[in-house]
Image (cartoon, rainbow, N blue to C red; front, side, top):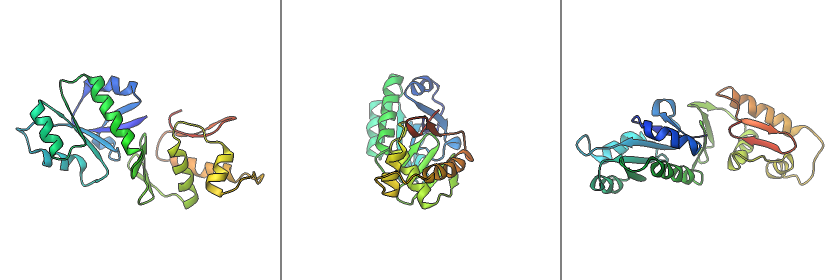
Length: 206
């Protein structure tokens, strides 16, 4: 499940978002969400100020505004919003735009899966706002699984990608590293590193 942080209640979007595998959560509950959604009305504050509060100095955050009319939509985009939509637009359209922003984050500096956030530039990992202290090998495994989130990655592929081995050494080195990584991930939230028997290891929802 991917997460979008909201600065305002958007009840009409909750159900269609869930159907797309997107959870809408208040910003206080999802501070590491890569996409944030908020309403903006010109009479309340200027668009740059609203966007500044949305991003809270996090340059990698994608910001989407819900606005009242086309003039406000243009003003929001001109001010630097990554996207904007009319509040009167169909919820399915708004959610599709959020999904597009989430896809864009998968190819950028910040990679998120649910409440897990991986910063490729700083090599830091957070889950639910909690910093996870991973060893270099654990980080490499997590990043590889995150790049294939939702799909099972076979043990042989991990040996090639992480250990640079084209053969099975016949040891339990992969299982040991997975056990350590799983323990650190599980300490900060529900299980998200799964073993699919006969297929491999998978990062994501059960």
